[in-house]
Length: 68
Image (cartoon, rainbow, N blue to C red; front, side):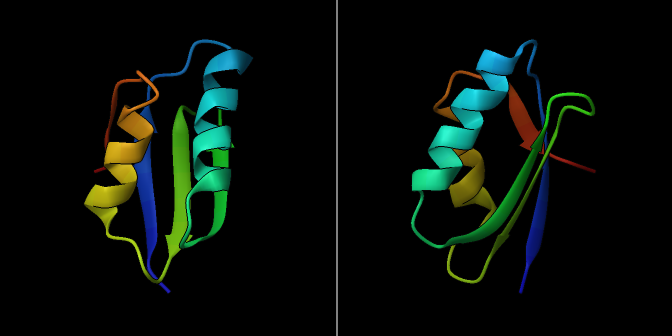
């Protein structure tokens, strides 16, 4: 199963909570981890592309990009 990692600018627990809410409602996400401390989001999904997930994270208003 593909695992995608993103760099997401999150300054508080409200920010990480917004990302968590979006990913928990997103159909096709098997597992995810949102880390406020490292500013990283990791997502496992068989049915969603890296770009589709990135777009959903960006819709929360957070600056996000695919991690290098």
